[in-house]
Length: 245
Image (cartoon, rainbow, N blue to C red; front, side, top):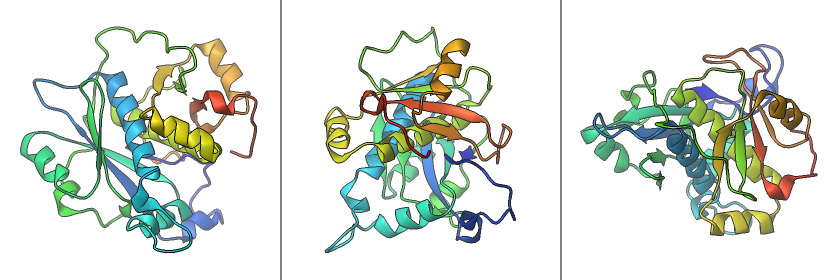
């Protein structure tokens, strides 16, 4: 599923991001027939995969030698921040795992993230993987997140497939990462990017969207209407912070 963590503008609206070459961040979730992961586990693992890529040395920029993925990430961020989640199992997963990337693991979930690629330039090992049908369930209602844990809160009024929700969780994690200072980023990385993904209660959602915390607005490419608010990134280090998000 694909979406972008920014206020959308219709194609041709003059948004400079639409004039830039379009890239996408591929994510592949492992879904074996006999052992699919729980939905929340997959969402949390996807968010951590995105953070692992953003913090990787291969994305390093600045003076001196640039990381091997830095140019691709920079080109991706200059356009619309698209993420696409596809599913694989068996031999498909083994082929996908052989490509350069990073695999994040949860309780049972495995999600591999790759450096951004042109929108129409997917590697042949990934291009035939299915986008639709990424449906997962939680066997029981997830417990309340531990105190002090960063939480990516989902909009309770929207219905999203697991693939779409994984992309949205990744967007929320990315906005939180951008908003943190260096010390807070390092602390989060040292924790293994500990986080939770939960669906907010309706009254809580209204408070969250007015809180000044990073807020994902979907571009409306798939499943939901353009401009829909999907995720609030509630990181303790950002409480009380505000900014143009």
